[in-house]
Image (cartoon, rainbow, N blue to C red; front, side, top):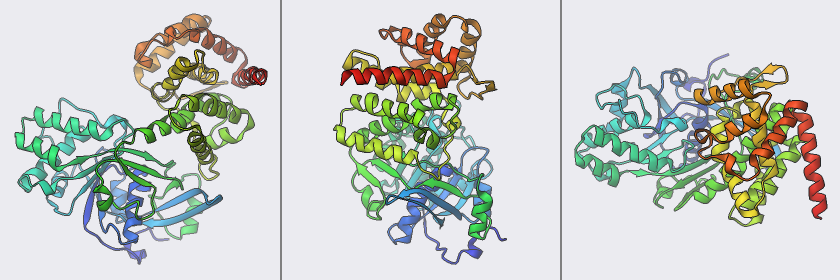
Length: 491
């Protein structure tokens, strides 16, 4: 069986390289590279992507081995029916390993067709590294590498204003475009580059804040043989994603003409302000993921689809979303309920095996960003604690004990966070009041002293005692019975 290449792909078309992409990972290949492929197939973009591997490890060698080609499987609910479909994506022209091909990387700056820069270097990627220098080959940070390329572009084209870029950072941080631009200008200042360059960065380049949404489990290791048999060729870069996608770009309207994804029928929006999109996604979709993970995982559930289809955990998740998250959001309830229903349908996707253990990485920082705003706003609005959210917080503290029954949990988080939880569970396992008080009052963990929220410490202590004594299944059963009785008494 042959490996995927242009030799066995009779429909391959070469286009000018219009896009520079930082990141070789599954997400961008199933998201923006797919979007560009869709536009190309409709004759609306006519451009290809040069992919830069900006870290020592990545897929650039395999990308070049397969001449930029790979197969994308989109699996999920389409027009109310479960659908699995696949196609070859042809939008990538080549890959560059910046570590040993730095000259080739800088040479890209001289391509007059290049217009877009896209990145996904993880949330930690958009950072300023004081030690980075312009003379480094390469710089350690992604913004440092980008600044060096922008400066090369500025010099090659003598600061021409029509040679700037439209930049789509896809890292999951708020105001990602604004933050990236700020760091690029900080490098220009630190490297003492001429003022004309900073002016060119400001005036000739468009840094867009973005919001991205598509669940991409990635390489289908569990079903690779079946997919290979179905395809009839070997593809080392197969990527699996869900049918749903959303790309929101905060930027000027001319982007719609140059990046005509919406005209191609894609769920892509160029808007003046994406904050409403972001708030709904982070609070409901990401918030539900984060709230369910410690509870469902400690109940013995392994995937998101299991969690939202098992009556036991499903009831808890729906309570979090509909009773506690939605009432704190400043949008029409009908819109929020529809959004939540769509999210839960995505979670039920029978083709996607989204493991809770993957979502659990860095759970404390995720809880802080996605759940704590709901907690504080609920208390402020209703003068009482959101019970399911508090139960999830209690489950999170227990999760960081590092045990599911007799099996150890591989915890992945900041080292100082792991040390703190380990110390607390070692010192206070027989004293839940001290354990909870120590953890909730730690401002470094949560950005605030949670122990100051009325009755929160007491409530978490009670839940944690139950979880610790009886296990998560029994604790959740008791919780749902109690809250169910309260709801019945209201009516």
